[in-house]
Length: 205
Length: 205
DNA sequence: TTGACTTTCATACGGTCGTATGAAATCATA
DNA sequence: TATGATTTCATACGACCGTATGAAAGTCAA
Image (cartoon, rainbow over all chains, first blue to last red; front, side):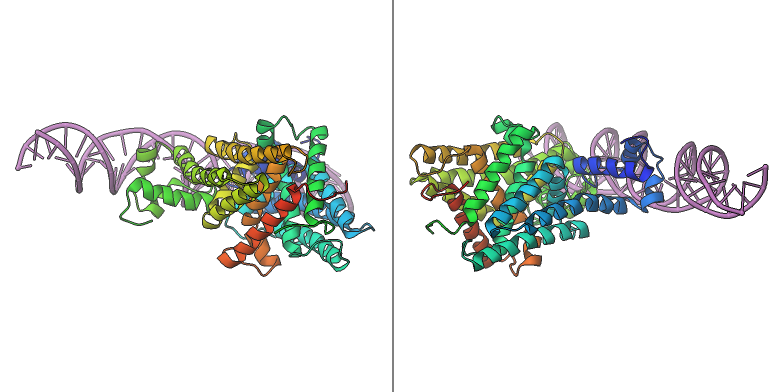
């Protein structure tokens, strides 16, 4: 919202904040342009439509997120360690950008077709993790089971625990906005996922 | 939408469907009344306002859900078994009522205060599971860790995997609408949670 | 400084929004 | 069947919606 930055950037920043907080239908073009200190016509002028601005916002959130995870997954090491590292990278991004799960959740809750940027994000992240799961299953370090379901289990905890901030704050004495407390949540997720996937443990049905 | 049922019931049924699919702001009173085959004024007449109808809808979804979980958790047996049973009961409810996670996700994504019915639902479910976790930690059958975080990890997988239906369908050959395939997801979650919580396994950091 | 351009701006358009109003229809009870 | 309460209905209100329009202001090479 730096008043010196160009109008399209200010609009994107306003969109990121307002769409996250109030959703697409709950945010009007007048809200957006007022927040960005641009004229009412700026959305049409720079993006063509409110929808197009929304999609641009989704891309701006989703792409660096998927990229961070993929990069962490490319590091060398045993598959399980790389899964946990990828998850930690994703959680680090969520720590800095808590709006990401909000956009995803809203789209999952709706009946519309998943917008392309969200679909790409999920396909890429699930694909990245599922590939590592398959690798670990081949070398015996990761337990049997559907790789995609295992990947989704891991992802779900990260997204949910980030968004359940208010539940956590109410029920527990953790404020997930604070980096120290968020670090506890991250460690918890890493440990949970490790336990879920590790093969070197007897298990009952 | 049985045309014989009373107008308030038809409105609640329409609200359940439309609010879930399009959200609060994406659903107009005109949509609701048309779907329920009632007059435009019926929402005001029976519920007072659109907001009040929305809250009534949330209660109608959340209360039986929490009740089913609490009931399963009351059965006798070791804590870990009761956790898995409670989770299976919750997942069974989600199998019949896929709208529940949609409402929760939308509220979590928004900035509004959690509506009372949703807050009650989460507090009750987290409380139910966390109490069982504490019980298992006392008798040594469940590993150490924050009981609330452990409970949230379990819940997150259930909600997310139910809502990620479209991701699953795209990435995998599972149609979670079909009971047979949904049963696979349920078994997966039960197994994951068991592994996450069980203490009788050595684990790394 | 001119002239062609990009960008900003105020305003207007047809629609739809949630809710209010009061008359008409329906129902239950006496 | 008459009466009073409940429920249905058509319609109206002011507010806000997303987008279009064309004039005004700003930018910069020639």
